[in-house]
Image (cartoon, rainbow, N blue to C red; front, side, top):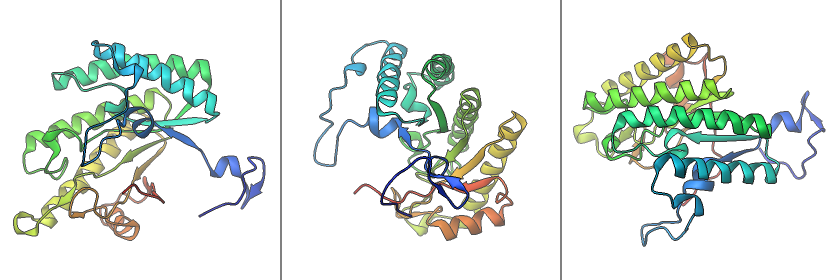
Length: 252
């Protein structure tokens, strides 16, 4: 899973290295991370984060993002919905503001030639998701998650994204004492089936991805590792539509 040099035109196993390695700039780490850690708040002062207007800030950030991506020479980028624009005071604001930013991103992509590799919904940062998204015991939270995924899939399709990723950031448990694993994994499987069916109905022809992680941030994740995810996909009949988005390195 490593290479010593990069020649985009060199053919390896029937494909060029450019086809194998679709380098993408991750919106969240590059333009959203403030440098905070358990010992202190963020220290990065981003010039695109200074406006009081939520959409104005989002457009400034996207201007900076596409300037950076094009100067770097990367062909792709990827994002969570709330990386592109903050949720806002009301949950309904996210859909409205995301639609505005999708139109803005379409202009940026057309002007630069940069393409969307994949999109996703952030179903882990907001306090409502502290006990999971699709596996949350509060069905109101599940409905929030489903709505976010619907809008994020729509955004990915509108921007020509080649894939759509699910990371089960809090789909797991901290303790088995109050957890019904069978019920929760059934809910997760059904949630992904419905998301797949919606995406296909809307014309999405790309791949859906799951990113396995063992303990980030829960004590145990249902997407624990690649073997676990493959078994899960086969059990719930998702293996023909889903692939693995393997993260080969991780942050401490």
